[in-house]
Image (cartoon, rainbow, N blue to C red; front, side):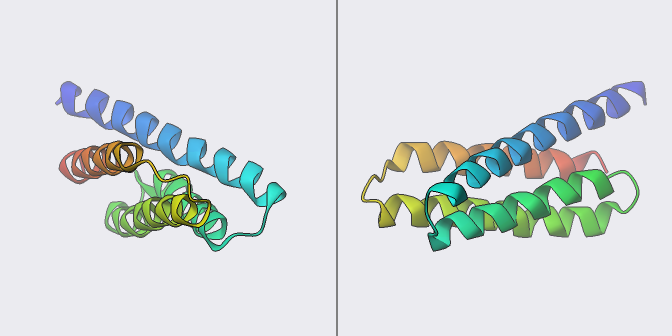
Amino acid sequence: MNVVIILAIFTAFFALAFALLHLLASLSEVKKGNLLGNRLLLIGSSLATLSIFLYFFLPIIALSLWLIGCGLICYGAYWNGKQKENFHPVHHLIRIGIALVLTILLALVQ
Protein backbone atom coordinates (compact mmCIF):
# COMPACT_ATOMS: atom_id res chain seq x y z
CA MET A 1 0.00 0.00 0.00
CA ASN A 2 2.86 2.40 0.76
CA VAL A 3 4.34 1.82 -2.70
CA VAL A 4 1.11 2.97 -4.31
CA ILE A 5 1.08 6.17 -2.27
CA ILE A 6 4.72 6.89 -3.13
CA LEU A 7 4.04 6.16 -6.82
CA ALA A 8 1.02 8.50 -6.72
CA ILE A 9 3.09 11.30 -5.20
CA PHE A 10 5.92 10.89 -7.73
CA THR A 11 3.44 10.70 -10.60
CA ALA A 12 1.68 13.85 -9.43
CA PHE A 13 5.05 15.59 -9.07
CA PHE A 14 6.19 14.69 -12.60
CA ALA A 15 2.78 15.57 -14.05
CA LEU A 16 2.89 18.94 -12.29
CA ALA A 17 6.40 19.54 -13.65
CA PHE A 18 5.17 18.68 -17.17
CA ALA A 19 2.22 21.06 -16.89
CA LEU A 20 4.19 23.91 -15.30
CA LEU A 21 6.99 23.61 -17.85
CA HIS A 22 4.48 24.05 -20.66
CA LEU A 23 2.76 26.87 -18.77
CA LEU A 24 6.04 28.79 -18.47
CA ALA A 25 6.87 28.14 -22.12
CA SER A 26 3.45 29.34 -23.26
CA LEU A 27 3.60 32.47 -21.10
CA SER A 28 6.96 33.43 -22.58
CA GLU A 29 5.70 32.78 -26.11
CA VAL A 30 2.45 34.70 -25.63
CA LYS A 31 4.51 37.80 -24.83
CA LYS A 32 6.40 37.45 -28.14
CA GLY A 33 3.45 36.91 -30.46
CA ASN A 34 -0.23 36.18 -30.57
CA LEU A 35 -0.41 32.80 -32.30
CA LEU A 36 -3.30 30.39 -31.87
CA GLY A 37 -0.92 27.60 -30.84
CA ASN A 38 0.40 29.73 -27.96
CA ARG A 39 -3.12 30.29 -26.70
CA LEU A 40 -3.90 26.58 -26.93
CA LEU A 41 -0.70 25.81 -25.03
CA LEU A 42 -1.63 28.34 -22.35
CA ILE A 43 -5.17 27.00 -21.93
CA GLY A 44 -4.02 23.37 -21.99
CA SER A 45 -1.23 23.85 -19.50
CA SER A 46 -3.55 25.80 -17.19
CA LEU A 47 -6.09 22.97 -17.29
CA ALA A 48 -3.40 20.36 -16.70
CA THR A 49 -2.01 22.32 -13.74
CA LEU A 50 -5.49 22.71 -12.25
CA SER A 51 -6.13 19.00 -12.70
CA ILE A 52 -3.05 18.07 -10.67
CA PHE A 53 -4.25 20.22 -7.78
CA LEU A 54 -7.63 18.46 -7.94
CA TYR A 55 -6.09 15.01 -8.40
CA PHE A 56 -6.19 13.84 -4.77
CA PHE A 57 -9.70 15.22 -4.10
CA LEU A 58 -11.66 14.58 -7.31
CA PRO A 59 -9.68 12.03 -9.32
CA ILE A 60 -12.19 11.41 -12.14
CA ILE A 61 -12.69 15.11 -12.82
CA ALA A 62 -8.96 15.71 -12.55
CA LEU A 63 -8.21 12.94 -15.05
CA SER A 64 -10.75 14.40 -17.49
CA LEU A 65 -9.20 17.86 -17.17
CA TRP A 66 -5.74 16.33 -17.56
CA LEU A 67 -6.75 14.61 -20.81
CA ILE A 68 -8.21 17.81 -22.24
CA GLY A 69 -5.19 19.83 -21.08
CA CYS A 70 -2.65 17.38 -22.53
CA GLY A 71 -4.55 17.26 -25.79
CA LEU A 72 -4.48 21.05 -26.03
CA ILE A 73 -0.79 21.15 -25.07
CA CYS A 74 0.18 18.64 -27.76
CA TYR A 75 -2.01 20.21 -30.44
CA GLY A 76 -0.91 23.75 -29.55
CA ALA A 77 2.76 22.77 -29.80
CA TYR A 78 2.09 21.02 -33.11
CA TRP A 79 0.25 24.08 -34.42
CA ASN A 80 3.09 26.39 -33.32
CA GLY A 81 5.61 24.26 -35.16
CA LYS A 82 3.52 24.31 -38.32
CA GLN A 83 2.90 28.07 -38.19
CA LYS A 84 6.52 28.99 -37.51
CA GLU A 85 7.74 26.49 -40.14
CA ASN A 86 10.01 25.04 -37.47
CA PHE A 87 8.48 21.57 -37.22
CA HIS A 88 10.41 18.73 -35.54
CA PRO A 89 8.30 15.54 -35.49
CA VAL A 90 10.55 13.72 -32.99
CA HIS A 91 10.05 16.52 -30.45
CA HIS A 92 6.27 16.17 -30.74
CA LEU A 93 6.42 12.37 -30.50
CA ILE A 94 8.45 12.62 -27.30
CA ARG A 95 5.95 15.11 -25.85
CA ILE A 96 3.02 12.86 -26.75
CA GLY A 97 4.84 9.83 -25.30
CA ILE A 98 5.51 11.61 -22.01
CA ALA A 99 1.89 12.78 -21.85
CA LEU A 100 0.65 9.22 -22.49
CA VAL A 101 2.91 7.69 -19.83
CA LEU A 102 1.83 10.30 -17.28
CA THR A 103 -1.83 9.80 -18.20
CA ILE A 104 -1.59 6.05 -17.77
CA LEU A 105 0.19 6.44 -14.44
CA LEU A 106 -2.39 8.96 -13.22
CA ALA A 107 -5.21 6.60 -14.20
CA LEU A 108 -3.60 3.57 -12.55
CA VAL A 109 -2.77 5.09 -9.16
CA GLN A 110 -6.20 6.58 -8.48
